[in-house]
Amino acid sequence: MDVLSDVISIMRTGRPRSARIEWHAPWGQRFPSVPGSAGFQVVLQGSSWLLPPDGPPIALSVGDVVFFPHGDGFAMADSPSTPVAEPECDPLSEEGNLFASASIDGPGAATVLLCGGYELDPTRAHPILRDLPAMIHLPARLGRHPELRAAVELLGAEIQRPRLGADTVVASLLDMLLLFILRAWHEGEPEHCTVAGWSQALADPGISIALDAMHRDPARPWTVAELGSRAGLSRAAFARRFATLVGQPPLTYLTWWRLASAGRLLRESDAALSEIASRVGYGSEFAFANAFKRAYGMPPGKYRRTECPNFPTRDAVKT
Image: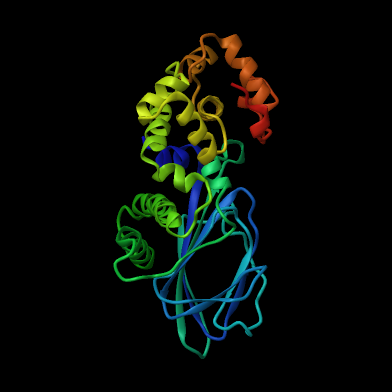
């Protein structure tokens, strides 16, 4: 898989949630902060205002997408002056449905919003998501991000008129929507951002090739020289450029990725520790267990049995 697909597959957990809600003015609704999640709002019809906790209100029109990668709270309303109601439920609760449709009565104009959320495992939080801002606004522009617009239209139509196979269709479209949102942001950000970061790393031909190689084959005994050769750079030039854009030396990132992949295998499979160690590039179960404990603060076996394990900090990962 490519880097972005890898990131989503390793972090996504549980079932996503979505809803198509038709609001009639006047209306205002607060959406609570949900740690360990990411949420989105899309305007399908009419217009609305986003009321962030900090900063001025933001006018939204048809086709606008707003994404909250860290589960921060916010409010939506037909007007900045409309009182905001407190939430009645948590959209990511276990009792929540995969998708729902509702209409909120009122005397005024209608606004239709498509909203949803994803559960993310904080123990496998990739820096590609950690480095995103609290809110991403993707305004609707003619000819921009056609695949994102197509996914929005399909998802909205499927939720409004569910048919046979709707559960599978909606779940697939929600995952597609998340990928398209992240793709749109990372493809667009370098246009107006000159600082180093993951958007520039993914856009850099050499660094993206090296990242893809590590993700496709984490068990390979990569060296900085070999990765630099893949990237078309000298060893020193590659090491400097990788660290500048990614924020870590190449082999430190490789170790982090190996252990994050191991964490997923521990949670989602019953593979023996020796097999997992081999699959992520460790020559022995002992070496793997030591590296894993250093990063996660507990042995692999305990991690597998623990409901809410510790978050592996960047400082805990050593090459």
